[in-house]
Length: 398
Image (cartoon, rainbow, N blue to C red; front, side):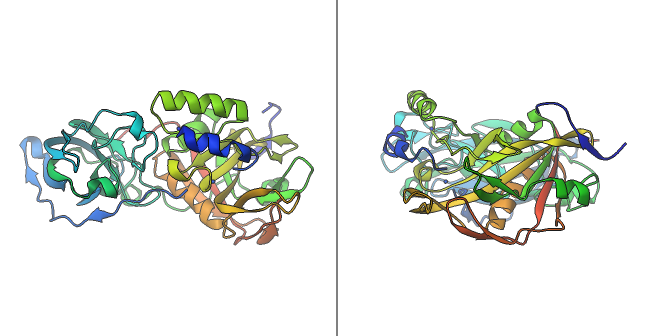
């Protein structure tokens, strides 16, 4: 049987929201990267059963501290925290932080769904890093290899003037996966993906189009996995599903403000591939910038199977501001013309979840290296397409 075949199956502020509903037809970003403070080398101590443990000082004046602890993929930790912080307004709190309030709806926190001051942790310091809540204590399994960072869920402005700090104890409970690949930072190694053949690539349209058939963004990533695995990977990578309508946008914005959550799902326009609209739209943005700038993408289920799983086509771009839509003289979002950067942002954010089993890049026979979007914006690329093979969960540590 061929490696691919046709499949017969069909296949949260609110103020910003209200100010931007007129932009319905437009999609926008930068990931908040930590500014780690240099820390003294955390000295490991040996406990019973040869368990390694480290103690790290986390000052109130910092967002992130580099523990200098290198983790392998799958390494299991017990993180416990003591201490307290007093902010510039005289409020004191422990590792669990302050209760979430309406003031937290618009903020710049690494973990948006939590309130200010909670102790958090992550592996890595770039787009691949996915912060998790620690609070007083948590067990944590490194999804990929990398350096462990611990931090406080606060902005730099909030850190200024804060006093006190936390003492973070990290105990290594398990050594992680075996083999060289488990030590590769950020995810699996680059490899050839079986089933992505020249014939298959030739069958996939290079570009998507608008409702009038005008060619637009390029297809720059392919995902191999079930629908559940696709949604799970984007969710774990902190992408959010985007609303499809203004009505739903207003409802969601109101609900999320009441729930004191960020509203990031401002709708993006409908575009087409395989003669139908996108199956999913996902966005990755800072709440304060969502109407102007966000990483965003659209996903279509293709009519093909690879390795017995559905093949999904992705068109990803990075909105960086506004410009005139050359089709109708209205205002639209401007994309970063170097669109390969967005392709690799997708690569990093998904691979950093541990839910990517294999990854690689392919160059079609007829690569698209320069073109214009449906709104008349120019973009350029090296022509390669990212290929990610997804899995539903982390493998078991042997």
